[in-house]
Image (cartoon, rainbow, N blue to C red):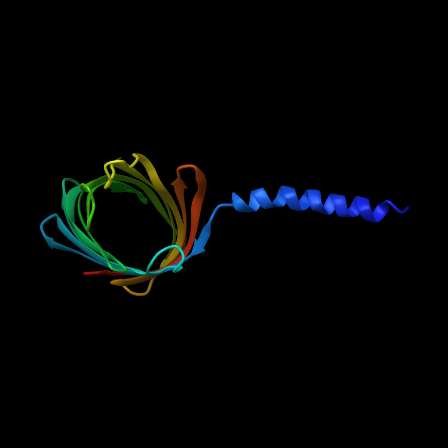
Amino acid sequence: MSRTPLRIATLLAAMLAAWQPSSALANPEDTQFWLVGFVRGEIADDVFLTVDSSYRWRDPEFGADQQTLRVSLEKGLDDAVRIGGGMSVFQTGSVTEYRPHQQFRYAAGGLDLRTRFEQRWFDGADQVELRIRQRVQYSQPVAPRVEIVGSAEWFGIVQSRRDTGQRGTEQIRSIIGVSYEVNDSLSIAPSYLFQITPRTGAPDAISHVPQLTLNYSF
């Protein structure tokens, strides 16, 4: 019986030793909140304008808050296919990024497929960063004025902003949300975004992002 406390202490020490490495290797996680707005409309025959802006509140340990503004023009080739491009500005703390882009979209029957190619210009970068984004989105009406929206998007680096930077998967995002049509022009969509950011030689970083999106069409 005298050995029982010693055995318990030994067991607790072994459990603590096993737990510490797993904690050190745990995926770093943060929680953000994004407020997003879209304005869309047809400005000429089969020519479509989209302006979107966002403010992203982030955990200071993972980065400064971010403000974004993007303008896109698309030309409709038929009822389902559009091609276009645009320009965006991202302000993250004191860092400014300018981001031209070109894109191809196919949208029909609730399915929306988009390929976007971005050129990312950063202050102090060795070179322009080239990135491809592949998104699959699907929306399904579930009640009058209400639809469920889900999407998955892959971000891939073709050329890093640094001479010694790596190429390949930069991040993966998935979104699930509900869109409510307030009237013929305005809808509101609360959603949840789950983001995985792979890191070389370390566990992937994970972000949980509740977001609220306002969509206005003219």
